[in-house]
Image (cartoon, rainbow, N blue to C red; front, side, top):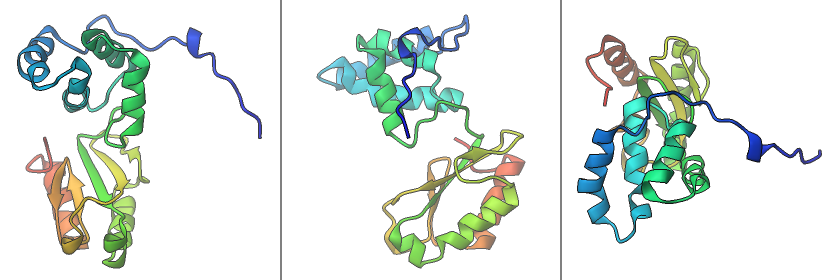
Length: 181
């Protein structure tokens, strides 16, 4: 195996004419978020969450815009986005299903649930259905070991899951009656 260098200094990121960080967002961040933190960089995570919720991803252009807004290096924003599993640089589905795979959930049958969702939706973990409706994630501990197995459907925790209850949640999300932000 050899190390292959990337032309990072000359790599062009995809951009669009319209900014991702709208003036309304920046005004809200300035008024609501920035006063909560000792430094501007302290607001980075909540700002990334805002962008993720709005666009179902954190595009590279948005990272540059956020860095400019906060007065930090774009590489620091990218480091943060790439460190946390909850942030995505590609669009995720309208319903993100995150099945916990911690030891407690493993003992309580998370694999049956994960396999069922994989087959039902025709995707593997960290993939999105062709119609853009669902993204499947296999996540580390969600902190609800006493109610395992558990999963997140768009950041809402669902406990003591069965195949039937997971199917119901997927059905609701397909109909648009549940599972949305």
